[in-house]
Length: 478
Image (cartoon, rainbow, N blue to C red; front, top):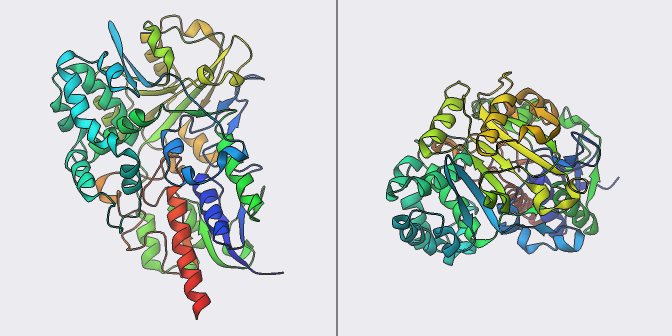
């Protein structure tokens, strides 16, 4: 049998992106996946009732449509179609109209306090004007000099602040709440350094493109990447769990779209003990509890404008959101948890039978928790959408332990590939000049546990592939 140049273990967006880049470079590559379809966190299934299609993990993809790597690939030719609504984010508030994040600064300003509209634009417009270049730099390799150094310096000046400090630029509660909801995607307490950067990044993406979902479900992203990979001559082997390096086909390099914990189980014996100990110290952060609903109609929000957004941040004020995220970090379960809720069927009617809808929401809670958060999650939605519970035809819950059982990369139920706290934001999974390479010259890491971290953007896989390609090229010259 001809030896492969590369084997990729795991077929999440980063594993597939790594394989695609290797194939584009003319390298022979095979992806090996434990489950019966590719995807990692981008899978879709009938979790509740027949005809209701639910995304198993990721659902709305601002970094998918804006990914510097995915934008170079002909994924539309392989079936990927992005679907959007008028707004990216709606943020309901008690007794007041919701704050809504539109692509337009003017429409967004209409929902902010008058004094804050100019401040919002003044803060974000410089980043939006060069948004694609900013994403190239923010999602680029940590050792590369930024293409727009002054723009990155400005982003760092504001972004390295805790969200609670950055939000003080705004006089009113509405802009502060909107930023807090964006920052809470970090799964960090909002008092932590660099949570401001997460808030800015999500706000910038919303002013560049409406946050989309994929027609037919997030599995369509995986299917398009897999189809493109096969068109380049790459191979995908499904239904093949891997427990050790000895089970892999012969190849010159191996790339792992896996968490450090799973990597150690498979390849720990092939790595120096000191490096393994550093991998074992990697921190994964709080977990996720997720609920999917089959609904008899759209969620009855008190503000109808909320139905015009693919994503709803449910939690109220900045203070309330900060309290919820701090609870998850410190081992408590919030009575009123902050929710990230997605309304895919509003943009993609194929997700549910005619006249019906799907719903999806998750909250953060301590890693490995067994506490059922269903009642608290539904109470939060009912708070802003009275009558919501009456529309539930069926529900499917996924606890942190069930998340990890379905995907071992979700250690303790953490879905982001590892905590983005400042201590390991750039040094993930360990501090190395090339974080994708390991001390074993054959082994590389291409998962979200490497920079730039979580999200469906494929950039971790792309950078790891470029590192592996350089290694292969160096061997070819010898």
